[in-house]
Length: 263
Image (cartoon, rainbow, N blue to C red; front, side, top):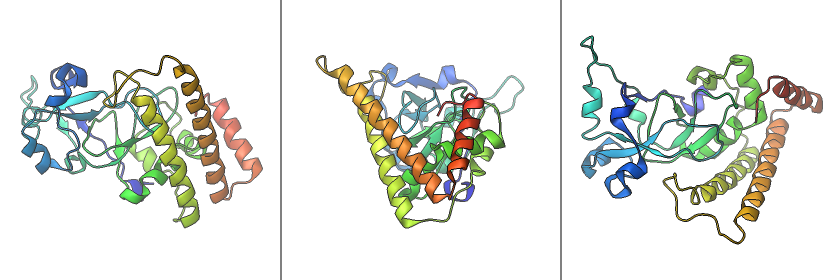
């Protein structure tokens, strides 16, 4: 996975209380959404930019609530000095800021969950991210959210912390066009379902309105059922394309349950 997704750690501000805000504290008019790169970001002359901080366990899409002060290419953060007189912040891998990719929370007792990272975000050290070619993003997301990847990660690092080095070691088969199309289609639909949920979440960037009063709960149940079916189909396709037998599949799922890993 390391050769394809280029996993990277992100920004460590050294003072989140000073440099981070929830988006609603700032207001959307003061936030620069959708920037492609540093040049576009500076051209907006805005102070606040979408920030992927990690957050709770969630697959496919979401956890988009924070903004970061990156005014003038992060001049305040880059020059933050600690009590020892040294620069305290760590703006790592800045060439990858604002790029589209996949992201995950590095510390989660609920298991590993990868999410789509839209263009225009700066990412946190706790919200590490990967940057595969644009056409491979859905497929990579599907592979990372499969039970096979959960199993592999549990072998590489049987803790609740998911480091970029662990993600880089997840085995990936050579590109199979048919399998890639299937996995990409399933991932696209899973992302859409999570995006629909996000439009009904008051804390999300995408919020439009609460769920419908009349049939909101029924719609939520339907989405969860469809999402569970999509994830099952992802697992089936991964098992098939990796040539894993029924016994292999049973072993993987039993081991995940023994480890109390939620997938």
